[in-house]
Length: 295
Image (cartoon, rainbow, N blue to C red; front, side, top):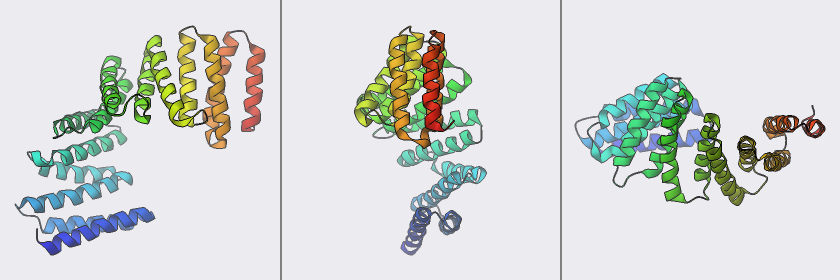
């Protein structure tokens, strides 16, 4: 690719970024398309021209994905992937585009295609030099979600554990991403009836989030609620009450934006209280929450 062509393509790509920053998505589509057409016109057997064309396809594909123009995104991603096959020097980009293609299929409800893309992307990320392990963890988490939705607990657990292992090694236990994976795994165990394991995962998530964010943060409040649900199942109902109280206090402090979360926690808490014969306590919680949300 000659220098003037490379320059105009770079200018158009920068224009796409500027337009996106301003929220002018339709004009950004025009700029991205102009970049694609310019790069396609310059396409030859020269690898630099191929790489330039692929990069413009990736930019436009990501834009279409953001705009939920899914079929157009898939077309761009497919064309880019075809050009990058058998290009070990572009493995990271191929992995990235394949992962994006999987996200589009997931948005379309095509879970099998999403799974195939994410599984392929995970392997590509792992085969990079050096391996892109954080991206491997993201793909494993995505695959776990799909398997969880299918009801395949064993496969979902395998993928979640793979992701958790990577994040724990890369970031340590007290990191936001590690806490999120612990929470995800805890939710899987709780739904599958593995209550002791759910308790430990949710305890780990809560400990990390409390250190990171303090008590009055939505993630911390949600972890208190999730842990309380696990504690109910392991027979630690008194401790469960304490965590429900912390969850309520956390969401109360966060205000109207978290009304639905507050109501969900109150519902869980009242269920526990009524099961324990504490109708008066449940009435107090309902009255307390009713005053906060204006019910």
